[in-house]
Length: 437
Image 1 (cartoon, rainbow, N blue to C red):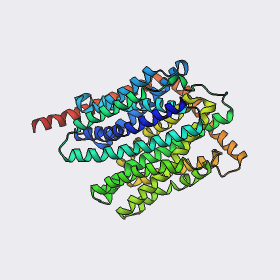
Image 2: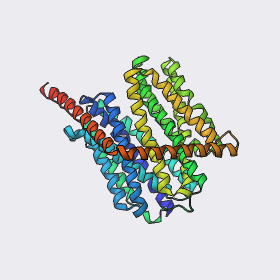
Image 3: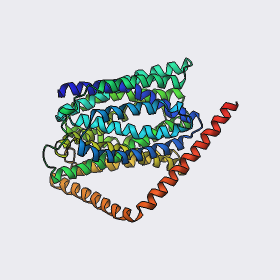
Image 4: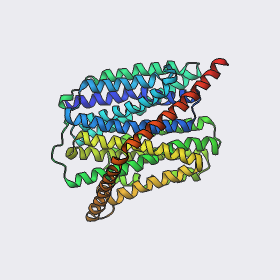
């Protein structure tokens, strides 16, 4: 049965790759076409991911007590697709749809990750993760090509999103064949202190790694177009090469031992610096391919570590930490990018991206035994220091939050409402102009 579940999960990713490529590229493009600035889109993304992280924390508590049900899985999976593909049809509510889409997409990612972690066998989990990535990337390339040809032929964004919706819901139908009763949802043994320490250490490693990648993905295309003044097709080719490299990387990194991931983790901080220093646009295409190959290895390492820890932590807890690291990185990355673009310009983002990747390198090489260069006894000490520091920070934050919680929620609600109102008015202005013209 586990084999059948793994096949279904891989097939779901293959079908979803088409939907994801179209919806994640065209829905933001539609909002920008309605007058939204890129910086404002970054703020919306950060807010949406923050809401998503808070939401999956609540979902985690529910899953711990009741487990995952087929109804919840399929409902969340289907609603995500409807939200993303209906943004052009929502009018002024499109911004709310975008925020809700980000939140529900993270919930979907959490549930899918839980299904994968619940397969129980570490090697099977690794194979499913890598094959899902490879097939999703393959179908996304097909989607990008077809969408580009369709737009060039006069098709509208709305029409393409409706097509993506139909294909996305087909993945939901495939997922309905999962046998959830066969999934392992509890830890196989009580978590030892070492597992708890490693859980926190890997989370910090992934947080810095993914934030670095998020910033680089925002700054690189802008740098090519605005600073190096390359043709748009070069930036488009760069994206396609990255996707193709993702397919290759999935088969490369799943076959190696943990020690081999040191190469990817160690070299990754050099990529943003190289991208900043190299002025030949065509060299950037090779560099982008190298970046994806290295990042895939470093990212797979974090995911595979949680696949191993799931035995001790349970699939639900392991999935929560893995998805939360990604969600928080998508809060930190866009916010840093927004502030840097306002104050320092796009150049500074490469330095910030490199610095964050360097922090993840230091964490890995000193505190995660599977790749650490330090002796085992020191690795445990460093890991415990990071764990205790994170616990102390969390405790302090909770104590401080008790006295300021009401005020914080009020300020968050007011600022979010004000930002959404401003964006609504701005979109209404542009829609009025377009209607009048």
